[in-house]
Length: 451
Image (cartoon, rainbow, N blue to C red):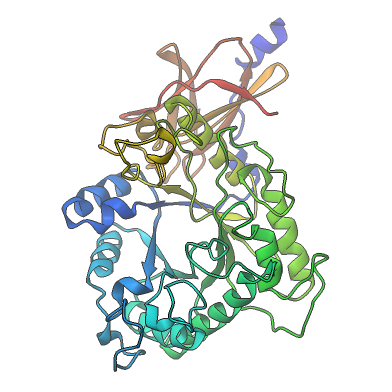
């Protein structure tokens, strides 16, 4: 290594990157397994608020609060009356989050009551937009003062939540989603919220033969063709932002999906470019912000997407850094405190039907990511330099952090006013770094070179 590179580390500390650009994203958390259970709810909220996140995402499934959801015919009741629904579990989560100072994003979604679908065959095929509008009136009346932002439907480009995805071989779910979005938005207004802040999308990252690719879905929902030209006289949707779940594969954050209409964390520019084209076409407001409302890196023991504990922590930090450096991203998230439950018998590839993106294993045992999440650190190499980026998440203010090498102090840095920092250091083969802030010390972080 040249002496010039060694001398660079003795120069005065560089200004944090955040001082030269506007970074306003907040971090949210989602932990349905822990928060839906009364026995673990209080402990989970304590842990989540202790991480320093700013918000909580809660998915409210229509079927969970409606009367007689399995019935083929709707019971006799006023569907716009909030007193007709059982909100108790969701109230406990939302009120508990607010007591901890967390903003709440409420995603209202299917599955729905069977009687709320047009054909009444199942709970996801053609939900009735008119009934959904009435339900959203009730949601607005019950939650207006407690919710910071709403979102309509979870992963509507996935058949677990909305069908049909295709009809006679052609995309179909985007067109139906548009009906649900408009009905839901109008329901919020009728329920007393004059100018509701509502996200659209909440799209899954990739398409298959069973679910639509997110950009294909988005174009159909906005009445745009493949060239982003209007296909009809659809009105501009009143959206506050586009929500997306930018999960990646085991290859890591820089994985590039082959389908050009797919969007993972490494190709967020596909989404922002699509939104810009849609904005120019008049389908949505221009410069629409992006909300990455669900994200996580899956670890072992998942046999398909799981990476090692160390890579989970490193990939999560790199992913957050990618989002942070994108000026359109307002929101970044961590999905799961504990891994989903799984089977203990049968073929290994069928034992893990849920997600292993938690900071703890399914049995509660901590992963390295539990230590890393409050103090994420990434180290990216370019030539003979390494760019360190990190965050003292609980700080929420300018503070000092320490970079450790082999357990000893290497650098002391001053963050920006939100706890972020970047710093260039010389590359040294085999060197790993740790971030320490007050009582938090993250695991060792290796240096990565972007593909």
